[in-house]
Image 1 (cartoon, rainbow, N blue to C red):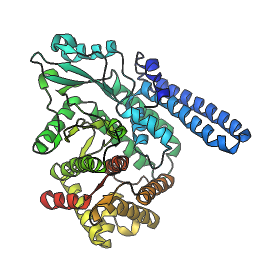
Image 2: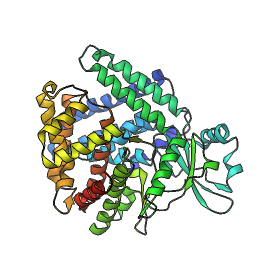
Image 3: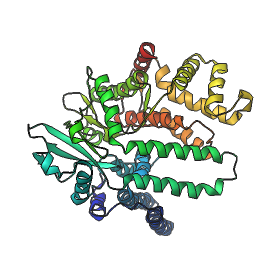
Image 4: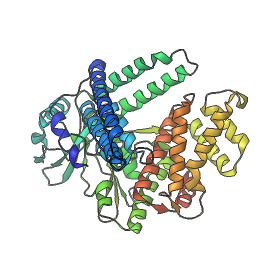
Length: 448
């Protein structure tokens, strides 16, 4: 993380997370006002600056704005911090100065003070951490949008990682979703407003499920069994030391992606971990018929012995049988360029009754997005995920999609899109080259 970001945690770690919509929007509005002031200062100074200094002034503006948002998101946590994590997954779109800082929200967010974490232990397990563990490190070694992780040791000496949810985090998600719904009321007379509401309701449902650590523990255990004979390590969890807001699991030693890349690893090492991350996504997709929608560097541990630690399973969506069959049929149709079957798929996912009801511009955009997404699957041999033309095309399609603002879409596909974007962003950072096509088709043939 950039050295200028270091003072930020001290300003926010002792403050309780505000749970009311008013206080949260007030804090966010104050941050926006400060950024606007930064921009005004930048614009004035740029007008009088020499050409060689203009880029320096712009970078300084980006940095100050990112630090302002980092502090606000670190204070508010919840869904707002998740938005910052998503921004860090857009290295092809966001300025590098901002991406570098927002990356810290994925595993180095400002930790909450120990006294606040202690309250959660007493509420959930009725005991202080020191009464349960022979050792409990008060300083968190990782923190993100919903909780933070502490090292601990059981009486038998086994090393643990204990994830503890921030107080009031479920309330903050409700508050953020209500506030978002309120701000979008100006669009209530547009034809697609009802679909926008469905997207918000679906996001609320998924995020609230994510704060139930027992639900996460169940999915974690499924993945532990799924990857038990591979180089992907999923930690076991301990139900006797876990609860709805506390998750105790094995501690996995290793490095996050940022530290791994700082060591200037070889291309073969990059490709190795790129292959394991890809396998973790595709194998779970086909075997469990599940979209793992939280692919970011904070959820993976790159271990020195070449194994990949997979440590967070809160955000996922399960395919229903009818949706799964539709998905598999659409992929087969895309590979074979079967337009009739593709139009059937697009009719279903856009909640229409007949292909003639589809907007031709939307169809064109969606098909171009699908073609971009499956390019690594249809490639012959190794695919270079750091290819600049491929990255630029993905960025352009995303910008076009945001600009057009189509929202008449089955909200389930927000999560599969998020998974694909997250995967491509990780591969882009790794500069990975791998035979993704063989992996994908092998898994599809075995389990679809």
